[in-house]
Image: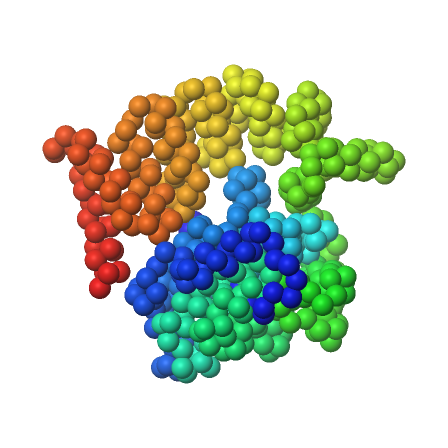
Length: 489
């Protein structure tokens, strides 16, 4: 798999200020402003797939450089699974999608050209059921499948590459901050035009609702989750007063639309579809992540368990275990997780979390003994492999960690943090060529092709003439050189 502006009305967060400054200095975060940008307007035709891919690539580079993201393998694995439960039912031309998880407690999700689907961690906090959560993903897949972004751009006959630079900066800021910042950032590049393009029309929203409902029903999800999620968004809108939630700033929502969606959803058979437990495990995991402090998380989940109806709720028990781990109470976390595993033998989420507790407690060998059989049963599993690699690194076994991380980078080449972790492991194993190669791939993903080329040249200088690895490095170096030459015109 491969893997969004008003002036400040209120005091912006430090992250927002940093992002705004960074993108003001570099409109597309590392790309030349007048080069390597697709000319996607003026002809009246839809954006070609190749140009959408180019926009998508630049958006991903900017997100990697500017956006705080959640890299938790368990959360990513869950989102991947639910997304690809929905994808077969989505009328997409290209089903090769890139998933982005923004580390922000606000309610937001987005889909942009190039098959990028993003959600904020806050979506977990707001959606109380898996069906509600899935409805937002289905809605975004519907926007992609109906090519609403391209259809909006088709209406902008005066679009230029410079405007596209501002648009990309706008997409990034909308994905990670309040919409106030975005309009300011693109004020010099036809701000009104961009604002109109970044907000979906009512017709497009209605179409995405209809298609999204079909996606939900066809994939075994309850379509009624969509109007339920819309009701949550409307309540969020009322609570925030003049500050419109980010998702509603780009996806206009009205009472009539909510009523229409509810009416449509009720036309599907009422099959009383049960949801899986995994969503609630991940939701509680992220509730701990966004708690004001680990102790607050502990107090919150202990209070949950004091309710008679929650004593046997495994998701709440799991949330408490994660809170204990974050608060350094490893023995308490271990006890809960072992009890959960006794009732759910082999459940990966519980195994990986228990291993993380053991690693945090410096009990690396115990973590490895837990994880290796789990990996044998689930070859290539992302959370298990990453946790085992982490245990090996903490235990000082760089070569073993590098073997695991090389496999992960092959399966998830767009995850830059894996390349950094691989470089660390290769360094521990004294494989200097491996360090250079891993750092090179990291720089490629960050849009710094010159630094990537320097890393490969250093690897090239070390490798003997005629060796297979030198040939691989030479080919990659040639590819990067051609990309640099093309970009520089």
